[in-house]
Image 1 (cartoon, one colour):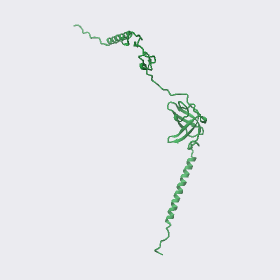
Image 2 (cartoon, rainbow, N blue to C red):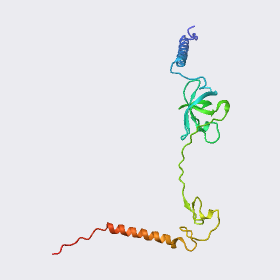
Image 3 (tube, rainbow, N blue to C red):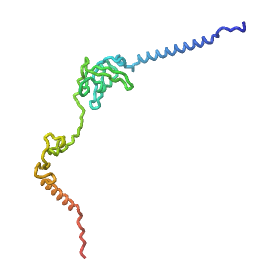
Image 4 (cartoon, helix red, strand yellow):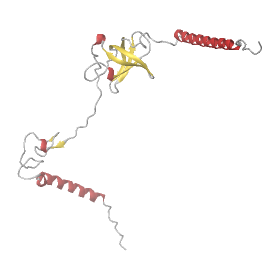
Length: 210
């Protein structure tokens, strides 16, 4: 009858078919891209780079002052960054050049980075024979108890309290302020300063006689 509900229009089936075709095309494009990337010559991913397996390699170089360097894997692939904090050894941690190690790594935003580095069969690393230079400025101080230039003061002196004496000539008859050697030095210094001052003074101009 004309008032009855007719059959479903075929337009919906056409829309479903179009959606299925689009999904299939997208899947085919993604699979083809992944296949191209896997077979491309620039892709040099080694088997153990992504799985976190134990790999073998050698230390290419290591900066003992900065505490980091790079490893060269034996199975090829990208060089691996190594920081001294992941090296398995006691004391000062470092790596010697061409030292054989086993390591685990992970991929970060900056590339491959080692998460654990040890010697072969899990032993400690040998490390580098070089050590960073540390410039320590030692401050010399005078102990007014023993009179020596040392690394302690009078309150920390090990020989106990000493009688008052001159710290210049070690005499107990007078103090440093009344030392005759000090007075001689002061006199010589004052004479030198006076002679230098006299030499630097300009000569007085002589007026011609009329």
